[in-house]
Image 1 (cartoon, rainbow, N blue to C red):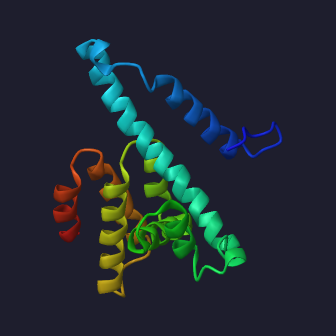
Image 2 (spheres, rainbow, N blue to C red):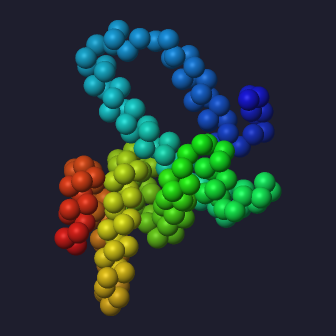
Length: 171
Protein backbone atom coordinates (compact mmCIF):
# COMPACT_ATOMS: atom_id res chain seq x y z
CA UNK A 1 0.00 0.00 0.00
CA UNK A 2 1.34 3.42 -0.94
CA UNK A 3 1.75 5.97 1.85
CA UNK A 4 -1.07 8.53 1.82
CA UNK A 5 -0.44 11.98 0.44
CA UNK A 6 -0.89 15.15 2.47
CA UNK A 7 -4.17 15.62 0.63
CA UNK A 8 -5.53 12.25 1.77
CA UNK A 9 -8.39 12.27 4.26
CA UNK A 10 -7.38 12.48 7.93
CA UNK A 11 -8.74 8.96 8.58
CA UNK A 12 -6.59 7.51 5.80
CA UNK A 13 -3.52 9.31 7.17
CA UNK A 14 -4.32 8.08 10.69
CA UNK A 15 -4.61 4.44 9.63
CA UNK A 16 -1.29 4.65 7.77
CA UNK A 17 0.40 6.22 10.81
CA UNK A 18 -1.11 3.59 13.12
CA UNK A 19 0.16 0.79 10.89
CA UNK A 20 3.61 2.39 10.78
CA UNK A 21 3.65 2.74 14.57
CA UNK A 22 2.66 -0.89 15.04
CA UNK A 23 5.32 -1.95 12.54
CA UNK A 24 7.92 -0.17 14.68
CA UNK A 25 6.71 -2.10 17.76
CA UNK A 26 6.63 -5.51 16.06
CA UNK A 27 9.87 -6.70 17.64
CA UNK A 28 9.54 -4.86 20.95
CA UNK A 29 9.30 -7.45 23.74
CA UNK A 30 6.41 -6.97 26.17
CA UNK A 31 8.30 -8.91 28.85
CA UNK A 32 10.70 -5.96 29.19
CA UNK A 33 7.91 -3.77 30.55
CA UNK A 34 7.46 -3.36 34.29
CA UNK A 35 4.23 -4.74 35.79
CA UNK A 36 2.99 -1.15 36.22
CA UNK A 37 3.68 -0.45 32.54
CA UNK A 38 1.92 -3.67 31.54
CA UNK A 39 -1.14 -2.75 33.61
CA UNK A 40 -1.25 0.74 32.15
CA UNK A 41 -0.69 -0.52 28.62
CA UNK A 42 -3.43 -3.17 28.87
CA UNK A 43 -6.03 -0.66 30.02
CA UNK A 44 -4.90 1.90 27.46
CA UNK A 45 -4.87 -0.64 24.61
CA UNK A 46 -8.40 -1.76 25.53
CA UNK A 47 -9.59 1.86 25.36
CA UNK A 48 -7.71 2.37 22.09
CA UNK A 49 -9.31 -0.74 20.61
CA UNK A 50 -12.78 0.62 21.46
CA UNK A 51 -11.97 4.01 19.97
CA UNK A 52 -10.67 2.46 16.75
CA UNK A 53 -13.79 0.27 16.61
CA UNK A 54 -15.98 3.38 16.81
CA UNK A 55 -13.99 5.02 14.02
CA UNK A 56 -14.34 1.88 11.90
CA UNK A 57 -18.10 1.84 12.48
CA UNK A 58 -18.38 5.55 11.67
CA UNK A 59 -16.59 4.95 8.36
CA UNK A 60 -18.78 1.88 7.80
CA UNK A 61 -21.94 3.97 8.26
CA UNK A 62 -20.68 6.43 5.64
CA UNK A 63 -19.74 3.54 3.34
CA UNK A 64 -23.28 2.19 3.69
CA UNK A 65 -24.70 5.56 2.64
CA UNK A 66 -22.29 5.72 -0.31
CA UNK A 67 -22.89 2.05 -1.25
CA UNK A 68 -19.15 1.37 -1.56
CA UNK A 69 -19.66 -2.11 -2.92
CA UNK A 70 -21.89 -1.06 -5.82
CA UNK A 71 -18.99 -0.50 -8.25
CA UNK A 72 -17.85 -4.10 -7.82
CA UNK A 73 -21.34 -5.57 -8.02
CA UNK A 74 -21.55 -6.47 -4.34
CA UNK A 75 -25.11 -7.00 -3.17
CA UNK A 76 -24.58 -4.84 -0.08
CA UNK A 77 -21.98 -2.95 1.88
CA UNK A 78 -21.82 -5.83 4.35
CA UNK A 79 -21.17 -8.28 1.50
CA UNK A 80 -18.42 -6.06 0.09
CA UNK A 81 -16.72 -5.64 3.50
CA UNK A 82 -16.96 -9.38 4.15
CA UNK A 83 -15.27 -10.11 0.83
CA UNK A 84 -12.62 -7.39 1.21
CA UNK A 85 -11.69 -8.28 4.80
CA UNK A 86 -12.43 -12.03 4.75
CA UNK A 87 -14.81 -11.58 7.70
CA UNK A 88 -18.13 -13.41 7.81
CA UNK A 89 -21.17 -11.83 6.20
CA UNK A 90 -23.07 -12.21 9.47
CA UNK A 91 -20.37 -10.33 11.37
CA UNK A 92 -20.30 -7.57 8.76
CA UNK A 93 -24.10 -7.31 8.64
CA UNK A 94 -24.16 -6.87 12.45
CA UNK A 95 -21.49 -4.18 12.17
CA UNK A 96 -23.40 -2.32 9.43
CA UNK A 97 -26.56 -2.58 11.54
CA UNK A 98 -24.82 -1.15 14.59
CA UNK A 99 -23.09 1.56 12.58
CA UNK A 100 -26.30 2.78 10.97
CA UNK A 101 -28.40 2.39 14.14
CA UNK A 102 -26.38 4.64 16.35
CA UNK A 103 -25.69 7.24 13.73
CA UNK A 104 -29.03 8.81 14.65
CA UNK A 105 -30.64 6.63 17.33
CA UNK A 106 -27.83 5.89 19.81
CA UNK A 107 -25.61 8.97 20.16
CA UNK A 108 -24.74 8.30 23.82
CA UNK A 109 -23.57 4.77 23.04
CA UNK A 110 -21.54 5.93 20.06
CA UNK A 111 -19.86 8.63 22.12
CA UNK A 112 -19.04 6.20 24.96
CA UNK A 113 -17.35 3.90 22.45
CA UNK A 114 -15.56 6.83 20.80
CA UNK A 115 -14.24 7.86 24.21
CA UNK A 116 -13.12 4.30 24.96
CA UNK A 117 -15.42 4.06 27.99
CA UNK A 118 -17.15 0.91 26.66
CA UNK A 119 -16.29 -1.73 24.06
CA UNK A 120 -18.27 -2.90 21.03
CA UNK A 121 -19.70 -5.93 22.83
CA UNK A 122 -21.26 -3.77 25.52
CA UNK A 123 -22.35 -1.22 22.89
CA UNK A 124 -24.25 -4.01 21.11
CA UNK A 125 -25.90 -5.02 24.40
CA UNK A 126 -27.08 -1.43 24.96
CA UNK A 127 -28.49 -1.16 21.43
CA UNK A 128 -30.27 -4.52 21.68
CA UNK A 129 -31.72 -3.81 25.14
CA UNK A 130 -33.04 -0.38 24.19
CA UNK A 131 -34.46 -1.71 20.90
CA UNK A 132 -36.12 -4.60 22.75
CA UNK A 133 -37.59 -2.22 25.33
CA UNK A 134 -39.03 0.14 22.75
CA UNK A 135 -40.20 -2.67 20.45
CA UNK A 136 -42.00 -4.45 23.32
CA UNK A 137 -43.68 -1.29 24.64
CA UNK A 138 -45.13 0.91 21.92
CA UNK A 139 -46.65 3.49 24.26
CA UNK A 140 -43.63 4.53 26.30
CA UNK A 141 -43.45 8.13 27.48
CA UNK A 142 -41.34 10.52 25.38
CA UNK A 143 -37.64 10.39 26.24
CA UNK A 144 -37.74 6.81 27.52
CA UNK A 145 -35.36 5.54 24.84
CA UNK A 146 -32.76 8.22 25.61
CA UNK A 147 -33.02 7.68 29.38
CA UNK A 148 -32.72 3.91 28.97
CA UNK A 149 -29.68 4.31 26.72
CA UNK A 150 -27.96 6.71 29.12
CA UNK A 151 -28.68 4.41 32.08
CA UNK A 152 -27.30 1.35 30.29
CA UNK A 153 -24.20 3.20 29.10
CA UNK A 154 -23.52 4.18 32.71
CA UNK A 155 -23.95 0.55 33.78
CA UNK A 156 -21.74 -0.60 30.89
CA UNK A 157 -18.85 1.30 32.45
CA UNK A 158 -19.18 -0.83 35.61
CA UNK A 159 -20.22 -4.28 34.35
CA UNK A 160 -19.19 -6.82 31.73
CA UNK A 161 -21.42 -7.63 28.76
CA UNK A 162 -23.03 -10.71 30.36
CA UNK A 163 -24.09 -8.82 33.48
CA UNK A 164 -25.13 -5.81 31.40
CA UNK A 165 -27.35 -8.04 29.26
CA UNK A 166 -29.09 -9.31 32.42
CA UNK A 167 -29.55 -5.74 33.65
CA UNK A 168 -30.87 -4.72 30.23
CA UNK A 169 -33.58 -7.37 30.45
CA UNK A 170 -34.80 -5.71 33.66
CA UNK A 171 -35.41 -2.29 32.13
